[in-house]
Length: 332
Image 1 (spheres, rainbow, N blue to C red):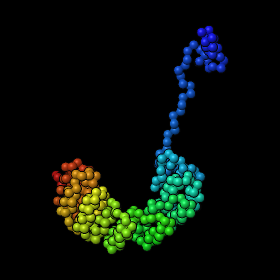
Image 2 (image 1 turned 90 degrees about the horizontal axis):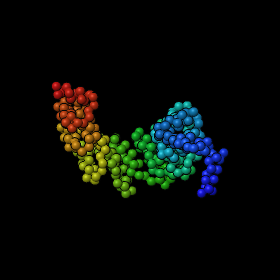
Image 3 (image 1 turned 135 degrees about the horizontal axis):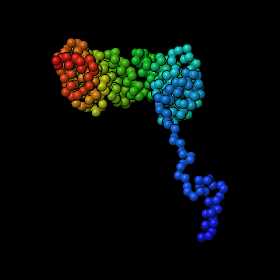
């Protein structure tokens, strides 16, 4: 016991211990609290930082931020390269990006950075430059895939540049990148928007030849094509087939049918159409009934419009300000 007391006394009187410990009582105050972890940046904050860095010409900072944001699960967005615009700095900025992108972290980070930039170039109408980046990716073996080409095909087919789009498909095949359903859908939607049933059928034939089955957007395009051709009955058949196959129907698919029914003067059938689907999807009801009511009001079909708006009111669906004011006046 004496040895323990002596060791304790030596420890208590030790000059190496802080005064708070060598005294009679121990302090409970934490003199060196652990700092809280730094707050993680958001996706928008990373986009803003990249914008500032790119705008100021600091492309090394752009590279570092592209790496860091993925590590922090803040993936690239359509705003990531918004500093790249059709201005005098465009050419030099693009060259700087071509220099630093190969230096980003290999794998997903690098591939997604390239694909995000390609999408930005397509939005700016710079398809040729987007194809230059495609070549950069091919040379560097950075993981070309079907989705890499989607923005380019979308941009070209939206402008009905079908021949150019098929040439891009040849570029895909030269790099052993296969077409997918989404890529074919761009062609299909373009032909259907123009009401070109023959060309749309040819696209479907190619899809079937590659063993592909249509998805929701394939059927949406077919409904659009039928409506553009003035064949509402055919559109309804396609819509029923979607339901039979258990495919989710897009709001736009219903909008195609509603728009064509009103255009053809099938007002009662339009009302019957939206009523048939009422109660299954509140958002769909609001979109479809609101759209139909607006079109009917513009055509001065007040009786049918009031009927649709009454149904919206009973179901507690949201109306636009103009429609609500119209309905209240009709009810006075």
